[in-house]
Length: 113
Image 1 (cartoon, helix red, strand yellow):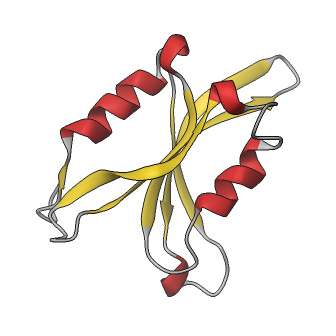
Image 2 (cartoon, rainbow, N blue to C red; image 1 turned 90 degrees about the vertical axis):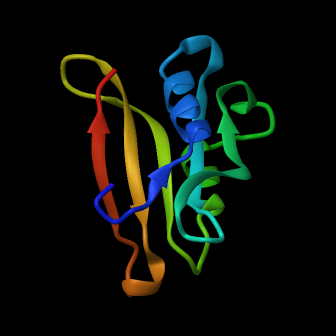
């Protein structure tokens, strides 16, 4: 990245795993490392597809509850939605910056798989 911040290998592994059905996570949060030099996986901040209907009733609501009130985060969310033609799935990349905005602002980039 132009900012000098690098992406930790574990982040790349999580992204690649999310594209495989058998290793699917519904959502994962990432943060800057303490030294602000790497984007890392935030431990215990994920929703597994296998938990939906068991310990997770509404995946989107559970995802929003993972987001901190203060502090920026990055996230991958496996969005499922319907169009007039069909049901779709896309990995959505989200940048969460609540301290800079009075309202919730999500900048997203759809990553097709």
